[in-house]
Image (cartoon, rainbow, N blue to C red; front, top):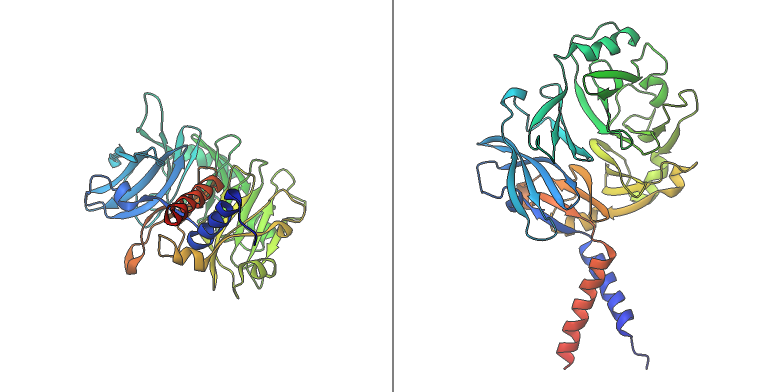
Length: 370
């Protein structure tokens, strides 16, 4: 009779733990709402190193909180509470909180603004306008090249930080344009339907669903129409006349095991491992990933976690609000709390954690045997 070695048994137990759990809770909403205030809604969040930053809102208004040492003490503090000069950051509209170095970017479509916060130095917690509708200097750049004439308003529906330079690439739903924003100025990446190149010529439609920017400057869009079906479009702004790369619904369905594909405005994320992760919420919810630099990105599609594992895990939900990165792996914010769903920060555990789970189980087995 063959006997299992310690390593083999630990690996087997870790594999079982991975298949049974799939992911772990990094911070509960109780951790995030650390002082039990009337802020009873989690809006968005991101992770910087081992610290989490979260926007919460409720009876006490809105505030950004910092949870230091996510892997340990989870020490909470109010990071920024005064949004008076910036207007009311909307619970329903503030969709994305991202980071670049020591700067946080908050996209608030209710007030047509993008805000920045420094996480270090003397200006820590001090909010500033990165770009707001009233800042006409940005439109001085946009207007001459946009075929529809001077925009009187803009609506930064969603965007993403460029990991190479910290600029903010945003989709403006009022002019159906994609602009690259730096402090106090903007330049157009894709113009409206009356110009070339435009969103229509690139993705076949002027309304994308989700956007992320890679470290090679590629723009990755979710296209909710894709002609007859949904698809993912990968566009290189440095080669605007080259054919785009696409991942079609027909590519995604065999991997997701669903019968329909859907994308969300906050569901795309370029990760430090060089892959793009996305949440697809068609008939079957899941988190998937692919290599945007591959000549055939569809061939690199991987299912990261399926709906059944999401539902069976600690969030008790397959809903994913936005994606982030924690401890070398994909993580996400789950904002819903109704019907038994548990809002918080969740992550796929690293292999070392799973191995420790397995070794823990091995120790228990040995104790029982003794």
